[in-house]
Image (cartoon, rainbow, N blue to C red):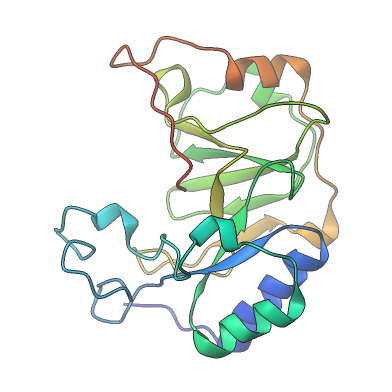
Length: 209
C-alpha cells in the first residue's frame, strides 16, 4: 500500500534543501498501481528498469537541471506536485553521501564518524557529509564488495519525504536543521575513493541513487 503524503510537504522540503545550498530537481514517483509515473513498461514491477521506479529525473536534462532557484523549484512542483526530490551531490551542493544498504560490517572510519545529517531509506540509510574543499570525489557502488555506495560529483540521491518503490517514504533520522554536516576524515575519504577489489573483480561507477 502506498503511504500518503501531502503534496505541499514535497515542495516545502525541496525549498528547504535549496535554502541550504543543496541543488534539487524533480524525480518521477511511485503510482498507486506500483508502476513509475514515467509510464514506461520497462520501469514497472518485473521490468528491466524496475530499480529505477521513482528514482529517475522528470526534467529534460535531469541532474544538469538541478538548482537552488526558488522560482524554478516552485514551477516544477506546481507542474508535478507529487514529484520525488532529487538532491544533487558534489562540490556545487557541498555534499557527498554514503549509501549503506542493510546490515553490513562497517570499516572503523565509518563507525567512528561524528554525528551527521542522516536519512532513513527503504533498505538502510544515507549519511550526508561535507564535500572536502579541492577534492575530486565521484560515484562508486559496492565499495570493497559490500553494499555501501558513494555519491559525489555528478551524482544524486533521493531526499525525504520522497516515496520509494516499496511504498516506504524516505525520512530523516538526523534532520538537516538539527545537525551540521560532518567533515569526512582522510581515512574515510581514502576508503571511499581508493580502488579496491570488488566481489566481481571490477569497480562499478554510476551517478544514480
